[in-house]
Image 1 (cartoon, rainbow, N blue to C red):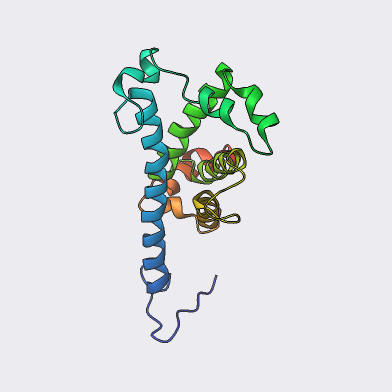
Image 2: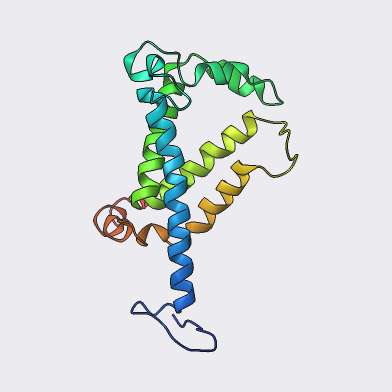
Length: 180
């Protein structure tokens, strides 16, 4: 593959233009930051770290409320009929919590990066649909921006930048392609 490097013609050891290499690194920081958003949500809900979830309401203690139930029951927008019946369903809570954990770890480490990014985009799309109508901006909110970022990182194979994506693809992804 030929890469146009612009005026200077300088490239790094991977053959990428220096500016593209820098852009990949900046995007890797964004990927890790979005991964931390997912992972922190899991940690706070599971262990009651006191940010949003008080310590006495930790999901892992079994003393707090179901982390998904109250939210799903309160959905009142155009998709309430889809989300309200999920409230109180154990499978929905477990899928949500494991999704937060898996997406967060996958994005931060680059493991199963493509799969993690797609799952993250799907979870964000569901949260966006459950929050409709959006109050602050009727067209674009932070969920849409995160979705676009995650989907944009996939063709760049950004899980290989400051991540274990290259190793994962060789060891697992070549055998089970949907887990790339």
